[in-house]
Length: 63
Image (cartoon, one colour):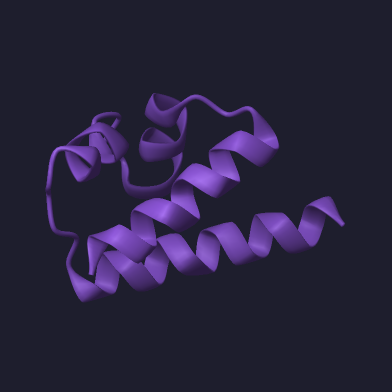
């Protein structure tokens, strides 16, 4: 489950230039979130939905 999520996050980070620690802190309150996903952490389904919704909202706002 985390691989597609990690891909989505990394794509967002590249597009926005946002540091992974800031993303994790803003979205889930954990500055190590992206780092932990890269190391194999599995996100809960509710967290996946939360991240996807946050990215969709901010991508839409950027357009």
